[in-house]
Length: 127
Image 1 (spheres, rainbow, N blue to C red):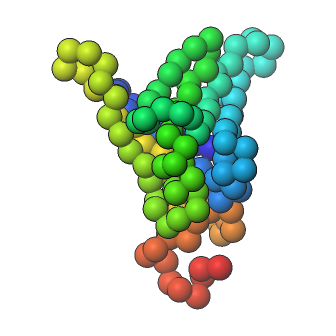
Image 2 (image 1 turned 90 degrees about the vertical axis):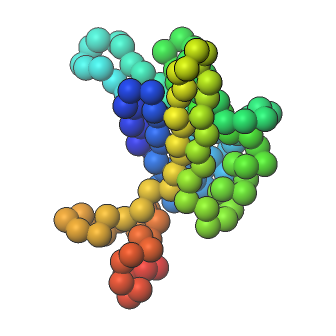
């Protein structure tokens, strides 16, 4: 699972197997280690939750993106590429949230069957 944070936006990209694990377990988590022997790490997770909207929560060194269960199930089982939302941070600030299925790159990348077929790639490459 890839994490991208830029200013007030956060994005997760998941491979086919990660979407499968998320669909069966209702959650998936990854860890970023800060260096050998440091013991410092950042955990980030995606969870299907009983929330009404998509939200980001941060607690004890863990960033969690929570998605309503119904929307999570539809996303996992369907062709929808991404789920997005905006979380109000107070004042005029907002956090943009995006969770998406990871497509194969069209140029310069080795074929990876765990990535979703890119809709722009030639049909003979799609599995």
